[in-house]
Length: 171
Image 1: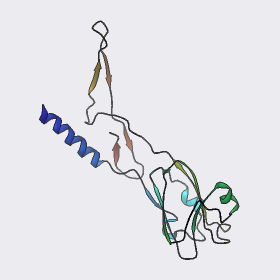
Image 2 (image 1 turned 135 degrees about the vertical axis):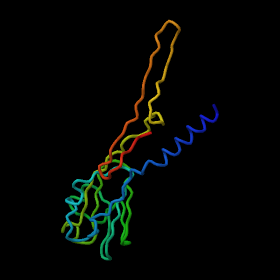
Image 3 (image 1 turned 30 degrees about the vertical axis):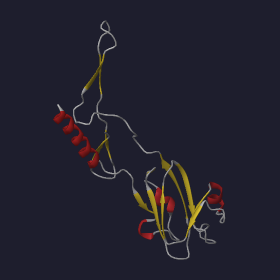
Image 4 (image 1 turned 60 degrees about the horizontal axis):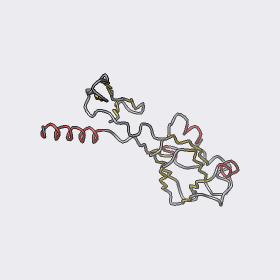
């Protein structure tokens, strides 16, 4: 019996290590980077940003990445940044769900379109307990000798990641 338990533990560890990371790293503006002349609303369209993802801003000297409030984003107000960086390579982790606003803090750049607004969704899934093997096993609960036995079967949920050809099973 101990051998069976060790085998199940090994199987669970193997399956957990085989599940790919769901977080994505996005390069803002792709090959154009964080620069004048890039339409960032077009860049964000079709993308789903999720908690755990990160943004990589790559830019030349003479630019900044400022995380700002919605009001400062709308009016291109500089000087009140929540966070700011001018290193040329800024990575911003998306840690919470909500709307994020970024502008270039150099005078005139935001007004010329160097600004980014994106919405981050909560991470999908969560800790949903499922059977670690591919075959669901029934769970039996008996409340008293005169009460009928209740059987509940848990089936693993499988999701397809549209960004790749793989299938993901939540364990």
